[in-house]
Structure formats: C-alpha cells, structure tokens
Image (cartoon, rainbow, N blue to C red; front, side, top):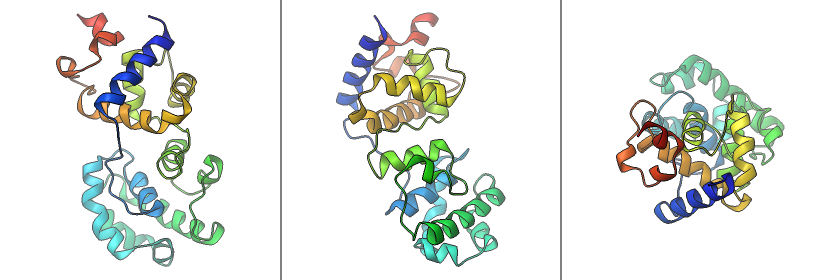
Length: 212
C-alpha cells in the first residue's frame, strides 16, 4: 500500500467514525480560544477547562485582560503548568491584540505569531478552528500518531510532520484531520500504552504491524 492509499483509508475511517471532530477546549469566541490554547501548552484540556470559567468571568474580552496585570492573571491560572510564563504571555497577548489589531483576531499565520505566547502550532489552531483554513497544528499527539500509523516518515520535528501531512490530506479536510489525530492520540494511540486492540485502523498501522 502506497502513501496515497494509506491516507485515503485513514480518511475514510475517521470520516465515518468521527464525522464532526471538535476541540475539547471550552470557549465562546476567538479570544477565549486563543487564551485556552496558550494555557493548554504542556497541560491537559481537562485542567484548562477547570481554569477558564473563572478566568473568563474576570476577563470576558481582550480589553479587560489588556487593562489588567500579570499578577491578577497569575492568581487565576496558578494551577496550570508554567503559570508565571503563561500569565506574562497572556497579558502581553491581550495588550498587543487590543492595541495593534484593534481587538480583532488575525487570520494570518505570520500575524498571529507576532502575539506573545503564540507559536506556529497555536497559530495553526486558531487559523483552522476559527477561520477554517487548511492549516494543521502538530502537537505531541499528532506528531506521535502520524509517525506510528505511517502518515509521516522520518520527521524530525513538528514542522516536517506538518509538511508531510498537508501534502496528502485534501485541504478541505485538514481542519478535521487535526482533530482526528489529536483525539485518536489522546484516547486510543496513547504514548505509553497504545490501545491497539481498540483501534479501528490497526491493520493499516505501521507500528501495530511491526509489533505483532
């Protein structure tokens, strides 16, 4: 089976088993999603969703956070990983977003990455989820799952994985493909103990076929 056929079979499986995949982060608008994604770095979505209700109640929009200070933000996110760094980035992001972008979330990857705390992965998430652009964020789940299945080959970093994936995933399904791989990695293709017996694509999987 060549790479094109592998992608076609994987797409067929997830299209049927997960027809409407969505982020598990809770948010109501682009600003809230960006805050949640920044908080989610090296932190579980479950923990982020515990933190954000009080955070968004205190800072319901860009201006309210831009008018705050890092200490206020820190107090509300201190149970998150790296709260000092994240409170610094959230404050800086809100100030720049309000001042330089008039409070409107940019839809361009390069523009998004000008915001404090926003790297390529986070920018891709915003462009994909908010603007439905064909950008594919590669986190640890996507990086691992793509390599295990065989969707990526010898990728040394997330950017190499991203380039390989967008070459074969049709642009219109890339936003869904991002969530397919994340959710599959979170619940089935786990890092330490993948649940291969529960996997619907194990027969296609390079990892499974080299371990049986």
